[in-house]
Image (cartoon, rainbow over all chains, first blue to last red; front, side, top):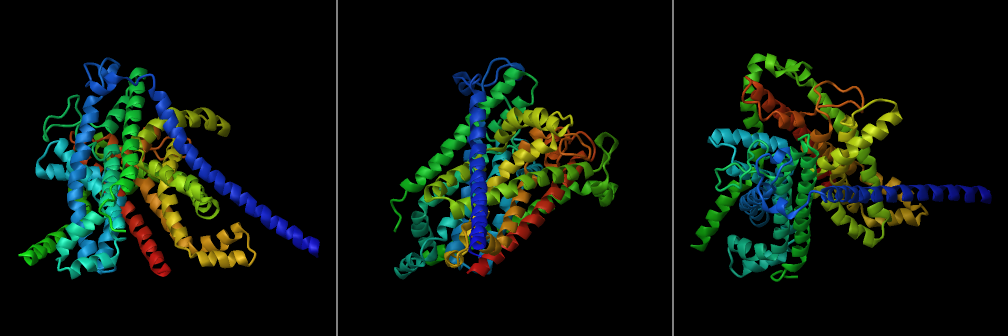
Length: 291
Length: 294
């Protein structure tokens, strides 16, 4: 009897061990996937990575393997991401403040708005791109930096809103009440208390959305156009890094493909820097935060 | 004066707050208006279920593309769901605190990597791996540009979504329940299986559905490795041609062939509606789970 019980317990412990190992192995696999991706991209990029890649625009025959760099795409992507992020912030902040200052936590408006933001977040970027194209035609625009900015702003808007909303929801009620009891209107509470209190969180949300915006290719495919020159105005078409990678990889020449890997490494580094900055900011910019 | 400002701000913000809902509506309407032209010519059923695709002859059957999308997405999900849930179990139940903290940036980074980078990686590593290692093992020939390659990459791209949501669901299971189970002599795994997984079942389903709809719409990474042959795939090693890839690949020439642009916009609309349905489903479940916990 005792032996049977012991045997049974042994089997249960073995099952436990099996699943512990299986679960740990899965976690390690996820980590390895990330390391493998980063490692492969960096390693493959070494032969083509050079300073002239960063500082020159494509010269004649660049896509056949001749001279030049991808300055046009880097600058285009930066312009595009900055413009789109600014525009998205202009939309996100009012929405989030409205939900958190004027509307109660569980009001119908708040629940539905959050729901639609989540749904909007789930819309594939190629569909956003197609919609941007529809808007572009409706407004009579051509494929340009402006059209790209509008489209990418649409992509970033739900990401940024939800990220900022998550931190604003954590602001304690008492803080809002204290502000109100001093005679501040709700608008003043929103701007002077909530925004300051959540400044680090807002910045993190902004950077998060910008990282998404700068890396997305499908949404700008229809709308931003592509050119070998650095865009000079909002009406010019603009090259973007993700598309530059895509087009270079699509050519049959090994030299050009190597440059695609180098471009991918540059894009990955930009994303890494942005996401590290987001983490660092989160800790640093909390001067005004009441604990 | 200050009150006036407050009232004005309130109005303005209320208008902007209506934007998310309106945008979803506008996207559907906008795409529908642009794709209307094709509906007058062909019945919807022919459009959705015909596999004849030759824009030059005016034949726009979306079946190969819908089938391609389903093959790639289901392959990805079959790979991603078990790994993601086991990872979430490890992180929430077994892992020491440092591992849990170290996992966060890894997941964020996986979610933040641009899809072209995944695609480029796929071309370098996954495509040759499928073509030279897996296909011979399975005894078939494949160039490597296949459903399986797309599925593997998509699986990695959906890890963060599923892991993140599942972790949140697990975190919402009360500690006391786990401790009650452990104190009755259950092992860690038994507690996980009978308490955490049972309590979180709906949430896990929602996480998988979210992962599914994320994978469904992914464009560039899949486009780069899946082969893009417009026929209904028969095996994992066949090339496929998912809907998003179709839209992305043909944007250049769509204005020059009659009704082509309407057909592509219709493809975008179909994609939008499928994703919308799955998203609404998943969010609905999650809201219910959240309410039950409270």
